[in-house]
Length: 281
Length: 302
Image (tube, rainbow over all chains, first blue to last red; front, side, top):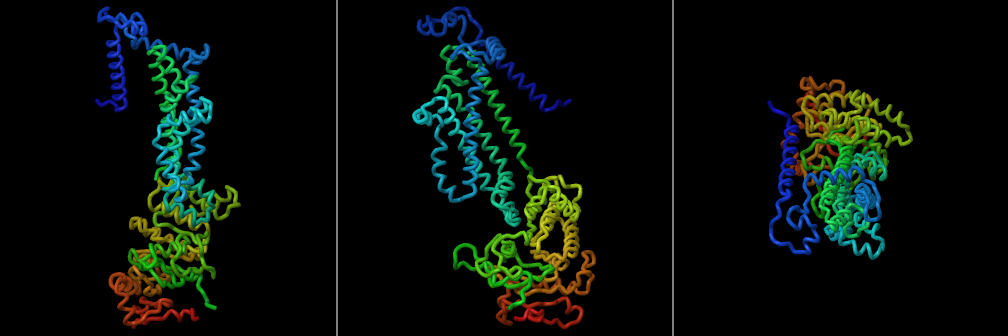
């Protein structure tokens, strides 16, 4: 009998998961004290158990499970400026990403429309876009800090600058490659420029624009972690860096998993929106 | 004062690229009367589609002009509806949406209910009642082209421009749609300009068949008057009509031989681009010998 592909893939996923956890468990099992003498400074850093070799600083899967449970049970606590729940930290990051991404969409989509409609503007702006697009968004950070003088707004600016390019380029491409015959339909019906833009060009280019937005939000979510490590204060990136300073690997692994999960949700959300505006030809 | 037909193409020329390049076509003159069904036949590359685009206002000629209702056209107009070769439906709109878009462009002040009611009439006219909410991707090729026809008719234009509207369809669907176009155009007294490759299609539909020579430098060779009365043209027994083969042979002879060697014909017999010869090959079959009737006998004397 042949079981469905989905079921078999699910089984394989579970198997891979069990194997990873198993290898991890074996690798982090406490061993009998042995090994050469430790550098005393390293011993101080990683703790007594690890220094004697009986226990690694690397947590076991069970430790991680317990830590994740602890975070999920109480994600929104606030105990001082350096001790906030992981839910609050994620909310800070998500807020910055959505704000920066939203502002970028407000700029990139109208500008992309203009570039796509006008070969003159396209040619004039192309060198700027080509030079600025490959710049790592974090390179903008010092400039932002100097001019804005506010670290929170600077990180939003960095998100803005990294999300703007894929949306700009995709919008311009989508608008520029609307089928000539569809534009001719609008022309022979004497449809005005605004109605043509909203009823013909925008729906025709919408799938391409949505693809750009999906790429942008993915990049923004990648960049926010690094930006918050630099800027500090709040956010999931800061949380990761703070836990590195605390050498709490379990907290870092928890954060990694949650960052992945939120990124997945952002991507799926935009994929859903993209499906709404896609048309079969 | 010249007594102009509804549409008058006067000295039209079109060049692509730099000046000095040979024109695709030049010195093209012909007219279409109100209510007349006019077909343009010629080989690929002679600029047929360009002429249609100029008539539609989508392309500007390099020389000459098109006069409609005694006014030179300078852009697209709702008075001249186009049925595109590739149907050109907007794929994100339903059948109703596509037609309502055209109707509300024509009458921007109409409310939604009135637009839909008007659009529904034309959906029924082309036999698509029940498919209003389907997207173009859910329709067959023939149904899509029906929507294209309904969209063009729904704005009640002064004339219809069709660019090989049936060339992408299978023979059976093509035949059915030809019959319907014939019926609709007869009912609505529509003035039509259509481009086709298909000789039989031209004989079935057209009152007047304009023959174009090969490009570059294409010109109107002559205009064949379809002397078969409209009510005697039926797709299934077209070939039994006494005039049919005479007209068909004349058209095929032109496409196969004369269209590429027309310059020699000009050298032998002379040629006035402003008054292409009007020929009636159908009558030669009924009462020979064939007579070539100059255009001026139709009352278009200057």
